[in-house]
Structures are given as C-alpha cells and as structure tokens.
Image (cartoon, one colour):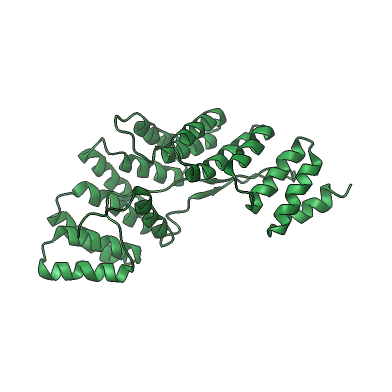
Length: 298
C-alpha cells in the first residue's frame, strides 16, 4: 500500500473517528466542578487535543475491508511486517484488542520502523486499561528518536488524564523547544495551558493559549478562544470573556450565547444578557429560560 497523499488534517480526522471507538481513552472534555449556589458562574468545559499517531497512513473506507486487504497481503507474504502493523491498527479500531496485540507482536519481528509501532501500540494498551505498558511503549519510542514530538505529546496527554499536570507540562515544554516544531504545535500549547490552569497558573495558561492562537488556523482557533474565555472568567475578566466568545464567530452555539449572557450580566449589561439568553433558549438551551424568569422579569 502506498503512502497517503491526504493532508495532515485528513490524517488527523482518522483519529477523531477512532476516538469514538475508545471513548474512555479519548475523553477529551474536562468538566469544571465547583460547589456553589451562585448562578452567575461560567462553568468551563475545556477542550484538549488528544493523541497523534506514529503513522502517516490513512485508513480509507470500511475497516473490515482494510483488514481483509492486509490479510490478503499476508497470505502472499507471511513475513510482511508492514501488513501486520496496519492490520493491527484496523483491528484496534474495531476493538479486537487481542487480535491487534498479536498483529503488533508479529510486526515487531518483521517491520523495521519500530518507533511507529511503539507509538501506535500505546493507543491499544491504553484502550485495554494498561497505562503502565502505554508509558513503556512511549518511553521506548522516545529512546529510539528523541527528536520526534509525537510520543512526548501522547505521554503528556496520558499524564493529563491521570492529573499529573506538572509532568504533562514538562513533556509539552520539551516539544516547544525542539528545533523542528510540528505543524500541530497549537495543540501542544492548548494542552499545556489546561495543565497550567489546573495547577492554579491562570496567567501562564492564558499566555499558552495566546501562543496556540498564533499557530492555529481560523477553524482550529475557535475552541482555543473558548478555553481562553473560560480562564478569563475565572479571573473575573468578563470583558475579555465576551471578546473571546465573539472571536469564535459562532452565533448559533447555544451554550456560548448562554455563557456570554452571564458575562454581560456580570458587567451590568442586563438587556444584552437577556437578549443572549433568549437566543440561547430559541436554540434549545432550556436553562436560559430559567435565567430569563429569574433575572429579566424585574
């Protein structure tokens, strides 16, 4: 199978699809929890970017057809390490973890690019609930090639999932100091910012998100603006919150309208807040109507 000519974004979309196959692994929404009776709290739902792959190959179409293709290749050549490697990935996507593990084992025996196998097998071990093995594979990949940012990024994300925010920052910082910066560096700064936030370093978090925005496209920036708005809310910078929500340019996102209404209310802009809540309610965010009854009927 020849190397894909698809763009990096299309390659990453492959992993977005895989995330749905392993929900507990790719739980990339962190909910902010705080016991309070204050209605006017903007509760953030932080978005952080998850794992990169060690492979530059795209899985087209149906996974079963993909697996069948490489099975046929193995019938022709039982020592085809690349075929084992790619079939193992296909099996992992279908949650055939035992079959995937067996294929990766054979791939190690016959495929020279051990670094890529270690990186991709990390996903398998994590989905199987074996974090120790996942860390071991990432450390082996780093030992093979210390200049590859992917295993550092993936290791940092596993640390986030385990609330080792200091360790995650260390890994993300190593990537930002590399001679060759990956095109997805905005993801690194975004995740570093979330780690800083949970350590109480809100100013550093905003600085990281600002760096992320400098390296992100318009579409990539939307969720980063959202993250920065949430941190500004925690700092009481409601003018900054409204500005970042507006920069998202998502006029029909109900929860953003609702939260922007809270920011306006905090600034004493009652009419503007009620207008945003009304629009959010029209879009299906029912909690907005509770706020209208409580704060807009006076």
